[in-house]
Length: 187
Image 1 (cartoon, one colour):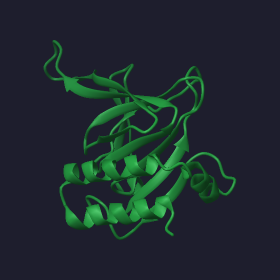
Image 2 (image 1 turned 30 degrees about the vertical axis):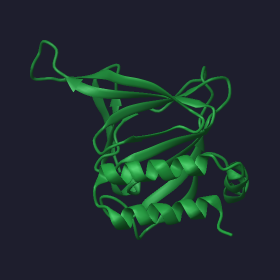
Image 3 (image 1 turned 135 degrees about the horizontal axis):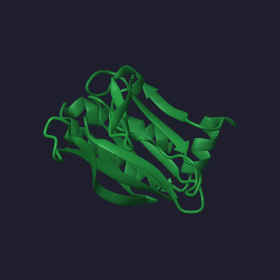
């Protein structure tokens, strides 16, 4: 019998094989991730794949399928509890998209948009939609969307993330919100 993660990977490969549209892929993968998050044995699978390691755990790396080119990754990370220093910087995923699913706990997501204020030559980043992702909930961010993820609650959330393209192969940006500036290009 295939594991939940293996079944999920097979379903994701099928999504990639049947659509080249990023939005359709992200929606299809989001539906499959919801199924995976509901599995009662998911934490045991994650623990087995982690093999005692902490931090980012790559659950599956695939070099055959992906968007916009071959290569996708399913990974997990245990975020810091709220009240501690940190949280992700505002960032984009370049030409890729990412699907986030919360297995335990909750995260906050804030989307940002560019807007002009006064000086029409220099747009500023403004917070847009803000929402909470609780256990079992999935959200995706399409190519070029800027967002920031923060841990909520007393305990560290367990989040699974599917990168539609291996992000180390994609140019992407982080943003310094205090100075309204691109912090760095990486990828």
